[in-house]
Amino acid sequence: MAIADQPIDDRISIRAVLKDWGHRMLAVLTFVGGRLAFAAITLLIIIFLSFFGLDMARGTTFFPALKNGAIATIGYLGRLATGNLGTAFAAGFGTRRMDITEIVAAVVPRSLGLLAV
Image (cartoon, rainbow, N blue to C red):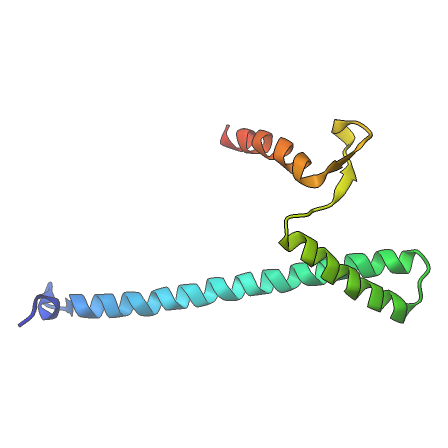
């Protein structure tokens, strides 16, 4: 009899434990993957609605605003994939335009430091 087939405490073998662990791990990964997919879809919808709403607020009619929102969303996701988050007027950093990556690089260490306290 192989070691993997020898019962542990006369009730269960190591092979059965490992088989059950594999099924549980697959269930956990499926659950986490589903949650991540749902989060990604939700963020995509929020990004689209932001661009769409801003275009509608400027007075654009519905269908052109829908098209412009889709185009702006795709452009934003393309820039985001390359690491270009754009520029902004940073309130605490003066009145000049700064890259958002610079702002994040300056703020995140402070936030993590507060989190560690």
